[in-house]
Image 1 (spheres, one colour):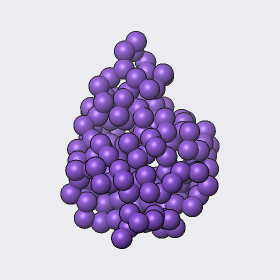
Image 2 (cartoon, one colour):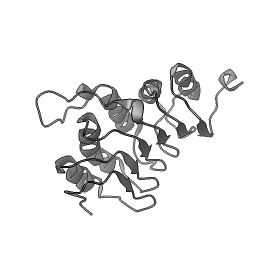
Image 3 (cartoon, rainbow, N blue to C red):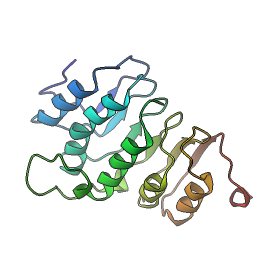
Image 4 (cartoon, rainbow, N blue to C red):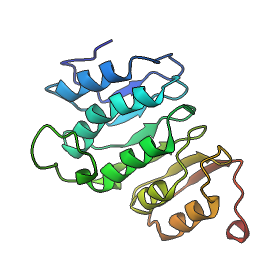
Length: 185
């Protein structure tokens, strides 16, 4: 399943057990001469933290390299990925210099995040200040799916505050196990 030398715009492997395959996928996407993946769904794929770290170089090369614009990102239900890995991913999408493994001496420009319309990270340890900063940068987001109470130690209110500053035309919000206080009223 190398997915090398293909011009896919969408990859949906939802429910496929990819444990141990993250680095291989990331490498094949990273060296693909035609990386056009703008919609990705790896929901419930049993990704380990190492798998996600292996995927990162390929995904970041595609989106920060501007060969494709991120439109749909569904990596929900991958609870083994740590909040530190998610932080690195979201920080790099905002500022590519946060990622130290670029093949060239200088990082590429950040991707245009205004194309991202669908973001589902339910069942994953994403709630953090990096995630809140990331969603506050989105201007085209239409659907956001998140879940709290996964032990990240982050306050859900911060996500709601970030949404207040987000200029996205959010049409659908799916929150599970959130403990927002007065922000929800």
